[in-house]
Length: 434
Image (cartoon, rainbow, N blue to C red; front, side):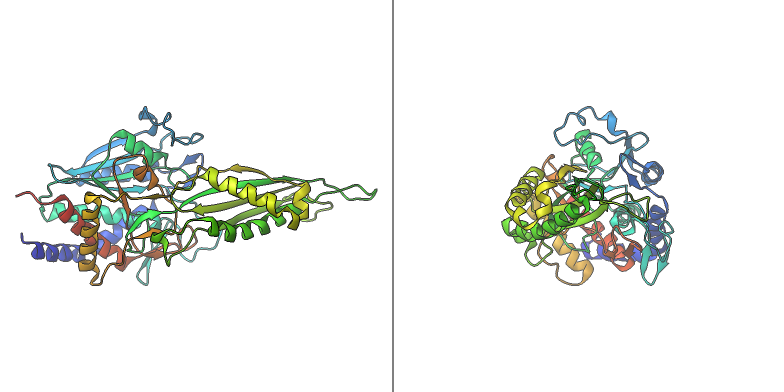
């Protein structure tokens, strides 16, 4: 089939199977797969994925992370997680000697939160062009698009010359990525990978790094009736929060500007939570003895978590004159997750060829020029590909809103276009058999 006619056939197939595509994305949302470290709830989701892949004609590999001997001794492995009944799933289609492509997405989501949802978090309901639910945007919509793109090409009897893999890994959220590492060590290393994180239909060839730390403060509690010298852990926590906000601006000036983030969101320092005193009591009769603050710090590729912490301590010592409580109430700082290293897809003839295909097919599907590659405004498991495997990874996923928040939703127009875009990339990258 000539190339233009094949594109027309793909478009027609996607339009005719619109209801099925929306139903698949909704089904993935309706299966809760919440990550609550050290455990997770991905088992039923992974079972559904494995059955769907098998019914679509894939050779399926469903395995426990603990079946991968090299995982626990790998320097990038993060200990303390539990993987009972939390398997990875991978399905392989087509074959031949053409170039291969892997779609790698994470099965887990963050929890639904305590905020009010206007639509059920696991309902998969459609309203005004959006499909709502936890994970609809991050990243079950992108995974469903990959699945539908492969099904489209199979249904149209398109003879791809290279292998196509769809991988669903566990434990990516909350600093995980052991599932992604296990996939690489299992041997699934294609010529290129697409991570369907929500890129809003942009080409992200790099991603930020980031980590979460906890600062804990211990003061001297009580009421100073006899002139005792007291130290409020709450005051120290609040002062440290103010210092962190100032450190955010300082940290950014210390980072070497990266061209892929020019004009985009730059690395940030974010306060996540503050706790002090006895939360079980409404009335407090004394200065709080303890305080805790969780915070997130981002950086460009090439910066480590150790680099960030060393910079923060240097800043702390230099700024103590402005924060008197912190002189006598110093924080104990520890990481709550592994640092998700920032990474960038390597540049060579192969990746340049892939990017030209991605841009050309995207322009054809979207009917508009694709902007230049960018760095993503978020951290993800892409570093497990770019730093620890032979497979470069591009981040390309759908549009939507409210990732990790109430009323998370997938924009269905972008979802439908993404199915077509993935299918077009597969044809031009993997090639066609004669």
